[in-house]
Every structure is written in structure tokens, then in C-alpha cells.
Image 1: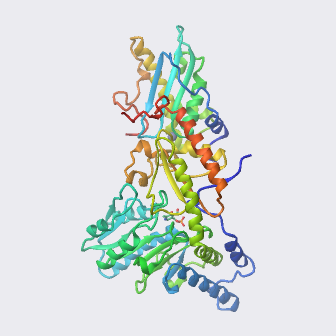
Image 2: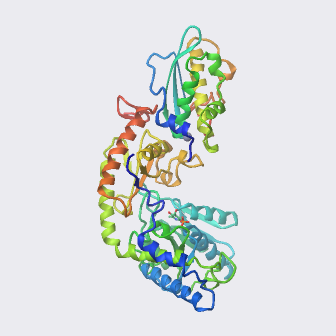
Amino acid sequence: MSRFIYADHAGTTALSRAALEAMAPYLTERYGNPSSLYRFGQEAKSDLEQARSDVAACIGAKPEELFFTSGGTEADNWALKGVLEWMALKGKPTGHIITSAIEHHAILHTAQHLEKQGYDVTYLPVDELGRVSPAEVEAAIRPDTLLISIMAANNEIGTIQPVAEIGAVARKHKVLFHTDAVQAVGHIPVDVEAWNVDLLSLSAHKFQGPKGVGALYVRKPLRLPPLIHGGGQEKGRRSGTENVAGVVGMAAALKEAAAQLETEGARLSALRDRLIDGLTRLPYSRLTGDPANRLPGTASFVFEGVEGEALLLHLDSRGICASSGSACSSASLDPSHVLLAIGLPHAIAHGSLRLSLGADNTDADVDAILAAVPEVVAYLREMSPVWDAAEQKPTWVVE
Amino acid sequence: MLYSDKVMDHFEHPRNVGSLPDANAVGQVGNPKCGDIMKMYLNIDDNGVITDVKFQTFGCGSAIATSSMATEMIKGKTIQQAMELTNAAVAEALDGLPGYKMHCSVLAEEAIKAALADYYRRRGEEVPENLRLPCDDEEHGCCSCGA
Ligand SMILES: Cc1ncc(COP(=O)(O)O)c(C=O)c1O
Ligand SMILES: [Zn+2]
């Protein structure tokens, strides 16, 4: 049996040992409800607040500006819907939102939902490296613009956005700015002050915390109306008995990630660059995303003449877990909106592969991937009617 | 698991991959835009029996597996029998496909029909009605992608 190589850390990560150990007591003996008045409950409450301070500190926020959620998707939904409801309460029942064409579906589908409710949404294009231009953000601002939401780093191609520049533009025009930092937090330095963001989403399972827990940062004095109503937890802004174990695990994971940001970032970048260097040597293959400003662990490619799902399945049978934005790997039959937005033709976007590295990956893993991927690509091209075996080029390339 | 053991077997060990340099019937369906492209090569003898078949596929796991299974199902069969092969029969022979993947199995049926139609055309004979693909007149020849 071949080894197991997990190279899909942008999809999710394993819980870190620190997180697991931090969580264990809250799943067993420290099960008190933070809302209860007796000491057993109040102890859970104070541990919850300690976790809030720890997470807030890692992104340069104040504890009272951080609200726990069920993950990145809820934080994104709440940011958009909450800001608009708040604006409506202030007498602006409709208006304009600026976002990008490459956001996660948690943002895009929420924005589409808001469009149906009468809001106007601008989906800014990106350049071929997947970058949003701060100048284009500025040019898109209208007198009725209520919110700008641009992700900090892209989940498919790893491009890091010029968030601070966009934040400066938003601040200059006094427009609220949200960033989906789900892929950034725990991987690159994140500072809500330096970035000038008013709202920021994060999710624990992307940095070795548990799944189903995340947070939304909301800059004071902004007061978002709740998305979820009920018993009044989180100062009445997000009801539901707190996921104490999850929150404590998130804080432990993030503290560890933040402490290792530089060393682990450098280690992963070196592994990632070996992947990029090795796999872009294949004919008709290319890196997707920004070669310079990219997430430390994310290497993403397209290989012409092969289809992504077939590539993933063959890698899986060799013990390698990866992901693809190909159409056939999704139910929609369209290649990923991100790959189309960076200008890849459909035919080429089908051949995408994302390898995202994390804590458990080593040089030996990279060696194994560098051996397996070229083999599978060559095999699939061999059986492909769109690959000219004699010329070693796709049939759509004419010279 | 996404796929049945049979699908995975045909995906990992596809039967009849390649081309037939002197095939007397060749058909290709799908286009790069839809993500799946299949090309079928048939050798049909004077008695109308498919003596050999090979395929090339650019596509996902179910596209490759259905191509492989379909070639197995028509090898040694008559044109008449091959004409009657449906994508549902191919999918069933593979112990089923996920619903949204049925689109890929349609291409296998269509690739065979396109090859058989080519056979008639090469002989200067009229192509039987049931070999005409829904979008035969369109240049891209992709019948399942909606494009
Ligand atoms: C950029 C981005 N935003 C949002 C999400 C959703 O986060 P969650 O899985 O915690 O709901 C993800 C993860 O899939 C993501 O990568
Ligand atoms: Zn398919």
C-alpha cells in the first residue's frame, strides 16, 4: 500500500494536538453552560472569554469586537446581510455593494441573494494573476455604495489581495470594508488595523482548529443586527449556546499558528516552490495565481489536455489527496468561476489541480507528488483525443 | 464513495484504450468547453460485425469508465445491436453513476452513434434516422453540455 499524502489543507486541516488537548476537558468534565449562574457555568464563561481575547489578539482586534460563529460561511453571511440591515435601520433600505468575481460561494451566493432583494452588486474582475485592483475598487464606489467585500486570499489559486490598499480606499471614501480572511488567518500576518478593515471572517478548520467554528470581527462602534435570534448569547448578537470546546480549540490552534507563522510560512513556501518549479516544467502546464503574492502552502496549476477529476482520482489511488476546480468535479458542469475569472478558456480550466500543503507535509511528500503528477498527466494525455502525442501538444494549439 | 467499484475498475484499468489506424468508422463527440470529449474507432467487417473497437477520452472518471464499458458492450456485436446501446444500459452495467454524472454516460452512447453514422457516410449510404444526434448540424457536436 502506498503512503497517504494529504495535500488539501486549503480544503480543511487536521486538528492540531494543542487544539485537541485544549478542547478535551470541555467535551468531558468542563461541560458547563456559559450562561448558567453557578460557578461551574461561569468557569466555562471565563474560558470562553479567554479564547475570545486570544483569537482577537492574533488579528489585532479587541476582544469585544469578536463574535463567534459556526464557521466562515456564517461569518460571511452575517457580514453582508448584517451590514445591509444596519444600513436599512439607518435609513438606507437599498444601495450598492462591491465585491469580486473570485470570492468564495459563501460571499457570491449571498451577494446574489441580496441582488434578488433589490441591491445592486458590482463583481469586480481580476487580472490574470487573480488580483483585484484597488484603483478599480475606488472607481466602482458610488454615492450609494454601502459595503465593499474583498477576500484576503483566494482558496483556489492562493492569490493574496492588496487588502491594506483596498482598506485605505474604503476608509478614504467612508465605505465599510469586509474581508473574507478564511484562507489568510493562521497562514499570513493579519492585522485589522493595518488593513483598515471593518469586518473580517475567519474559520478554525483552515488553521488546524475544529470544523464548524469561526468568528466575525466587527469594528466598534459598528453594531451588526443579529443573523441568528434566540437566547441572547454573544451580547445578543449571535444566539445559541456557545460551542465552548470548539472556540477553545480554535484559540489554541490559532495561538500556535500565529507563534509559528514565520518559520512554518518559510518552510511551506519552500516546499510549495519545489512543487511549482517541478510541475511547471511539464509541457503545457502553468501555475495559476500570483507567483509572488501567494499563500505559503498553496500551489495551483492547469495541465492542458487532461481533465481535473480524472487527475484527482488517479492521485487518490496513489494515496495523494488534492483538489480541482474542473467542471466534472462539481455538480454544476462549469469549471470554477475563479479559473474563468483569471481568463482561462474553458478547455484549459478543466485541467486544474490544487495542491495545498500544511503542517504534516515534508520534502518526501513533495518528492512523491513530483513523481506521481507527471506520470498521471502523461498517462491521461496519452488517452486523450485532444492531445497530439506526436507533437506533444494539445490539438487546440496551432503553430 | 463517489463511484461504484465497477466504475473505479473501468476507470483505473480502462479496456480498449487507443486508436485504430485503419478504422472504417470514427466518431467524436463533446467539446473542450463541456469538459468531456470521446472519440470512438470501430472496425466493422463485411457482415456488419464490429470486430475491433478502441477509444480515446478526455474527461472525468465516469467519462473514462463509460467509454471503456461501452466498448466492451459493442465488441463483437452487429451494427444493429450497437445502435441499440443506451447510456442507461452502460450506466447500469457499471452498477450506476451519480445523478449529475449521467451526462458523461450520454457521451459514450453518442460517440458510438457518431462512429456508426460515419460508417454509413463513408459507404455513401444514408445515415439511419436513429443515428442522427440531436445537434448533428452544429459544428461542435456536443449534445450534452447545452452549449
Ligand atoms: C475563502 C473561504 N471563505 C469561506 C469559507 C467557508 O468556511 P467554512 O467552511 O468554515 O464555512 C471557505 C472554506 O471553504 C473559504 O475558503
Ligand atoms: Zn464528466
